[in-house]
Structures are given as C-alpha cells and as structure tokens.
Image 1: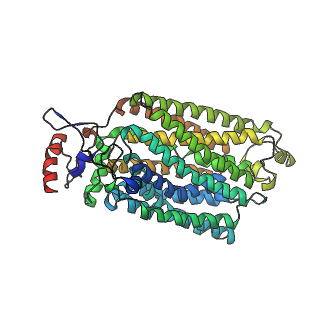
Image 2: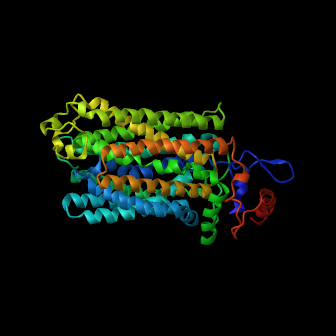
Image 3: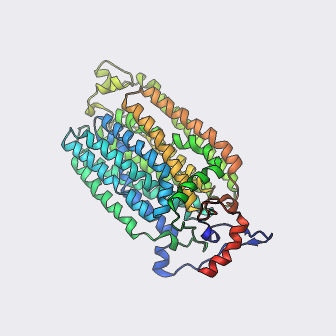
Length: 510
C-alpha cells in the first residue's frame, strides 16, 4: 500500500532529513477528456448512481411504509435490510480496496431494483411479504458495498479545501433522486384516496434503478484521476485479503478518535423511522405524503449547500469550521425536536376532524389506525402548512448531520483506502441504529417513545463528537496520519521517513 504515498494530497511532507518535500504534481488533460476525468465530473456521476438507486429508495421510504398503507411490512423489510447492511458494511472497506471502488459500486447498485420490485409484487399479490423481507436482506448486502465505495471516492477526490463542496455536490444530486421520485409518486397518486401508491409508480422507479446500475460502467478508474491541484489519489495496488483485513484493524487502532464519532454514526439513521412512518406515514393521506417526501428531499439540497458554505470557508481555520458546523447541527437538533415535541405532545388539543369523528383526540397508534386514509391530513387542510414545514426542517437536519459526519471523516484522512474503512464503520454502525429504530417501529412502540429516543440519541451523538473535534481535527492531514497508506505488502506500517526514502526507488523501477 505504501507504493503511491507520494501521490497524496498533502501540503508537504518530511523526507526524514529535515527538509520539506512537496507532493508530485501531474498535468491535467485538456478538452473533453479533461472535463470527463475531472474529479467534479466523476463525483457528479457518483451522485447520479445514487440519484437512481438509493435516491429512489429514499423517495419510497420518505412517503412512509414504502408507499404502502400497512407500514409494518416496510418496517420489517428495513429491519432485514439494515441487519445485513450492518454486517456487510463493517467489512466492505476491505472488499472495496481489493476489488476496486468502481466494481464495488457496480455490484452494490444491483440490489435497489430488486427491492423496489418486491413492493410491486406486494401491490399485485398481498401475500408477497416474504419477498419484501428477502429483497431487503439482499439490498442490505448491496448497500453496504455501494455506500462504502461512494464514501471513499467522495472524500478522496477533492483537495482538503474543497471537501465540503464535493460532499454537497454529491448530496444535492443524490437527493434530487428523492425529489424526482416523490414528484412522480405525487403526480401518479394525486387523484387517489388509496393508502398505497399505484403499480405505475413502482414500475417507473424500477426502470430508473436499472439505468442507475449501468452508470458505474462509464466512470473513470480512480487511478487515472488527477485532482484540481495536480495531485493523484493513492490507489491500493490489489493487496492480499489478509493485508486488507489487517488494514481494517490498523485504521481503528492507529486512529482511535474515530470511535468518538460512533454515537453520531448510530443516531444518523435512527430518526428516519419516526420521521417517515410515525409522522409522515401516520398523519397524512397518500398524495400529501408524496408531496411531503418531495419537499423533504428538496430541503436536503439546501442543507448540504449551507454546510458546504460553512465547512469550506477559506478565511476560517479548519478547526474553527469544525466547531461552527457542530454548533449549527446542535441548534437544528433542538429546534426541530422542540417543534416536533409540540405536535407530539399537544396534538390532542387540535380539533383533528378524523379523530373527533371516532371520539378520540390523541396522537397514538391506536387512535390513528381507526382513521381511514382519505380522512387524514390533506394538502388543502389549514393545519397542513405548519406540519409540512416541520417535515422540511427534518430534511435540513438530516443533510446537515450527514454532511458534517462525512466532512469530519474527510478531515482525518485523504487516503481512499483508509476512508473506505471509515465509511464502512460509519455505515455499519449507522445501520445497526436503523435496525433498532425500524424494529421498534415494527413492534408498535408508542409514538412518544420513538420520538424521545430520536432526540436523545441525536444530542448524545453530538456530545461524544465534541472531544473528537477538539483533539483530532487539525489544519492539514500529514503523512503520519496515513498509517494505512504506509502499510507494506506484509501488513507492517512503515515509518514516514522510510516510505519517503523508498519513493525514488519506486520511480526508478517504474
């Protein structure tokens, strides 16, 4: 792995003699080839893959219940999905580094079409619940691969000063998939009062996910990418499986501060169950749920841009930006959950027509189950405005949270191999949290308990992240931080000076 250390995005490095050595600079190609191989273009293509695949998955999830009236099947499907996701993601960094990010991305994209097809089958045959569970389990394996490859590329392609911008570009394109998918669902179901989306919505999503799975075939191999400053990526040279598994251990042992981000990882998908199923899926009819989902994913674009502006601000030190970003997310957590608590606690004071018709004013699973889908909140109801704005703020919080997490990991390394491990940790622990929340929802945990857990875990995640920011985020990432890149073919971590001394020999051999 140490072979290409000199091609990393460092501002400088010490060769052991007390002198500073600048990274090797390569000339970028011109014309169309220069545009096509530019890191920004490749991150945009990466965003398109996720636009078509997880973006459309998010559109269905955001509608609530995967677009079904009975949200239990979707919740159990998510339990199966995130259970396998948790296991696969932990080791996906090793698989990514062995197979290459592009092939890993390709394989990972294949599961989304199968999952959407399972809901189409459920619409046609109500007894196809087992298919949804099996498809969810398969998608979990695929998603672990896709998101690990995505994270390693998105955080490694930009220079240190542009990491938040590249994260925002990806996040904007990716979430446009949720916007478009929700818009399609809204249009297809505008005149329906049914509790689930129609077959045409699922068929349209299925076709788009198949197209998305083809995009990685046209992406440039990372080893040919030259960053905007002329530096190249450090691409693992097909190390053995033993070295790759050892690298997973080395990344954790030599950079233990990543553990302080684990609570933030865990909370990052926990809130989806309450937002999607227990708020959007419970209170609104199907067309309103679709519109809400479209607005939710649209707000993600704004949230990512806001965080990019803060985290990449050139005249502010990186450490200061890290603290400001943390503070913005903390404020959003309390604003959104304080607002949500008002609805969760005091909805009983609102003259909700459907509830009153059934002699009940409380916001519980039992009371809302008695309300017909057509009698739930609609886009023309006066009470809709405040509640949809809360859902929009849910989206802002989600994008700010995820962007901040990726940026913090990117501040710890520039090495795609190490970032693949970090992304694997992130997605594994994130999925473990999702298993817990979706399972709690599937067993009909009271709404207030679900809500309280999302608030508490969000605050806890930020509290644990604060010492990591203070102790680990520095102005630049140095070669000393890149232990994975300094591993030799036997899995030994070489001293920085020894690696620097080997570079002329490696060039001569080349």
